[in-house]
Length: 565
Image 1: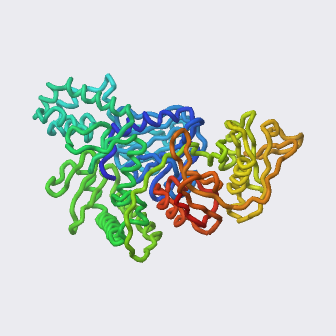
Image 2: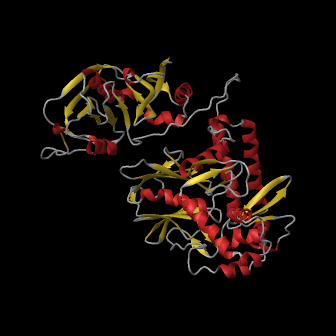
């Protein structure tokens, strides 16, 4: 990744994620890229916490990890506390089971049950710790500058490194050691001067804490911080911590162009990198004994041949013109496995790349459109009433419980596998508006994927909707009992428009009946397309693909027409 996540970014991320305390880790995904955890809490948008390459954390509103669902024993686990351990690079999510993400020592992720390890992304021994399933988990040695027991004077006074390195390593300030040096005008030349200026340094550290609490990130070309850099002269890009970390990750993944690497990155460069990684792994395996001795005796190595990075805890050397980096807290075999895994990841991406004939294209900057009601699909009818739909059994329950009021209407397609749809009647409903809500309910059902046209949808009032079945009957999750007369809308076709609608004075991308969307829009019908259709829609509307996906009906699509205005 461009730049490194330090204790300060972990602190900021923990503060940002604090809003999910009292919520759940709903599900998780594990793949070659890493691990993704869906955090959910009633009343706020869900987020996916992504831990990739054992060294980077970022948030997304959609799952970006391709892999096995619920591989970790964390499905529907409540969250009581989200915190940073000390002032170090450890993030903890506590609950009936506890999740621990360590970014130091090559990175690791643990799931704990009653203090015992129930899952570890990498098992083995690290610095005297036994990290295997069934063993009691112990935190690695960590720094806590806020603890009254932390001895600044001893940590600084016993250091033989230069002042910046002392701040970075002995105090765990990492890249902020250099930042403090710049902020103090490079005036501190020795560790004795560090001690003499300790109160000023503590004030600077407190300033880092305050900046971390703002949950913002300042992005520069080669690094990022929780405050405006004291060392860099150019102006940063300032973003919220969630948006910023994702931007940094995607920028690195795409080679800096902000698009999906598997589709856009130069295939030749990817192939060279894949071969380099594999060759590095093979070199380590063919010199396994020597590499293990190097890792054990790194303190005495020739520093002209081997470069030690104390922040990243790595040893780097050159072999046949290639840099080989070893993680000091892993064995040689584990380092080789890391190289093979990264090589395989690129190979998998290459297998998905489709090379199209070259054509002149004008690069278009696609904007990101924020989402609202992220667990649902929604639109606003031509007569101004808000319509919202569930996506699965859970949201089919919640959409009724949370949004169906006394004056509102409940819609349901007359087909198995249809969502619950609620029209919030804030304005007098018209025949046209009711027909639009019915069409929306039909298109968002399994009818779309099955291509069943000429459908029917019924609507009823709230008083007719119940969760209480008749004696002896069973009611599945997400289902509702409807009593009394049903009002039917029939002869419904499968056709929607994708475009913009305003909600609380902000534009959002929605899929809705054609008459309800004014201005620029793409008209879609059931088809066979997926990725290419989303790409076509996103480029026509000028928005990122991630803004389009969640709005579309379940299944596959085809573009029937594009309307400019």
